[in-house]
Image 1: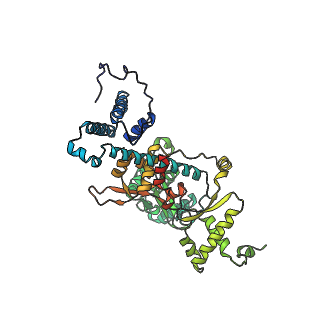
Image 2 (image 1 turned 60 degrees about the vertical axis):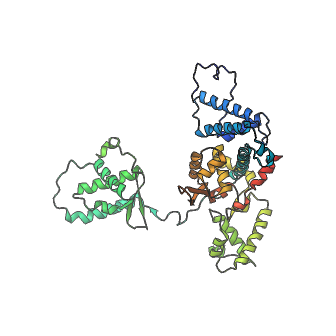
Image 3 (image 1 turned 120 degrees about the horizontal axis):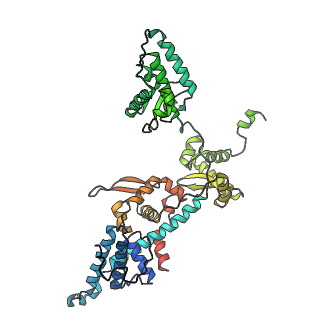
Length: 261
Length: 187
């Protein structure tokens, strides 16, 4: 329904001053038109209002405002009501004139209902504004809020010490593995945490083959914690360290930390 | 004073009242009578209720910066709205942005017609309300309330406890009567 540009009756030529208002929907637009021309909502001159309504709809199209389908449905409804009102009432109908429903009635009911909710919305907001001026106490820490104790770096270090001690005897020969990098390890841990919500930190060390690897895993955990990619928690003081997923989608940039790689 | 003396509750005829006040102060959500009765399980719920209403009268008659009131089905101590300017200066906060007209109207329809489906809201507002619904869900003002037993089984929405808190209502029956708006419009 785009107006051809060469048609003389386009908006640019017709001297309409369009005050651009954002209408929430067709009912809003109709209410605006009714108010603007001080029309009695119970006795809407349907031909006039249809024309006014269509002017706005065309103007909105002209201005390339993305027109919601509802506006066109309402245009059709208005035209339908208008045509119904133009139809002569047959003599049989005329005799029962009292029973012939006004074709506008349904639309009027909808407009009134809509108006009611608009008024209700305003009243609600004024209540909310009062409540916004009211302040309550900030939440107090309770065990309900933090069932886990955030682990400190000391917990991690003491755990690392234990692992190294345990492994002392096991590791006999160390073969330098140049390929093992911190970035690689970080990727590995992130991969593990993308599968599981949380993982025990000691589990990460289980398959470490060398002292170097243990150190790299340790550094990886430190780095991931620092970057808030993972979180370290304990379920009790001195309990087991658990790495939890925080923001594993966050990119780890090994270049920024080249000293470690 | 010794620590023991401070921590032991003072002997008065009705020690429940100060405990009630302390409990309401500490709760970060409006505390329900049910919850109070659970904590004070030795006391008669009827008596608690009576003392609670005494406390409200007493609390609100003293000329303080705080008020005790019933909100969202519980009891809450908060500052009085008239002192918001000084509080905002201290907290360095601004009131949160007004909800858009579309969101507010959608919220009004949901509040009065709940549980209500999106097509039913469309019927009243004459416009699709899906983005408004999303905003209201994000702000936790509305919550899904199951599905309607009809074609397509659309989700029904209703207002949340957060709605009652943010709009200062004891419960939904405190909403201004929608028919009053009709009279308002007629005048």
